[in-house]
Image (cartoon, rainbow over the protein chains, first blue to last red):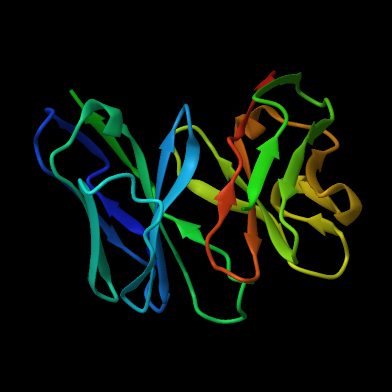
Length: 116
Length: 113
């Protein structure tokens, strides 16, 4: 298995532009998570999906952020418009269904976003 | 609300030194506990996890962690570190009522050869 795949690996954009981050979870995993990592705040959960349905989006910072999971093998995190304070590494992770609470999350390589 | 506290922001050790990284959590119920490692330029990888049973958990690369329920702690240990252990280490907790991981801020370990 190729693991969790994220694209792009690096994104540099200007303030005000729309940014779309992509994630392909491990095949067969029912849960997908989006995290943001910054020096100041560490790793924060933004949103997670179960069977393509958003379950908890309380970590999404503002209405500028949106996430979708149109099918079991693809998810996007969109920022529109982007701001310099959105600069961070964004990780996607997935985990299988199974024993409730016992699943391990597998992380992708992350997308390093820089907003100028 | 759940939270995770990692005591050390940056630890510097020489090769062969012993390592202990502290992790405390706050959560009133049954928890699942994890240590993840992030090597430079790489993604997070699971080091070890505790769900139930023996509170001393052994993970990959010679790491172990001990769950002490009375102290709400899950400290990571390694008896003899190597230069290749240089990385950032994250403690995480997940309550059985939900599936989201709550991470600590991380500890950067630098090992000099």
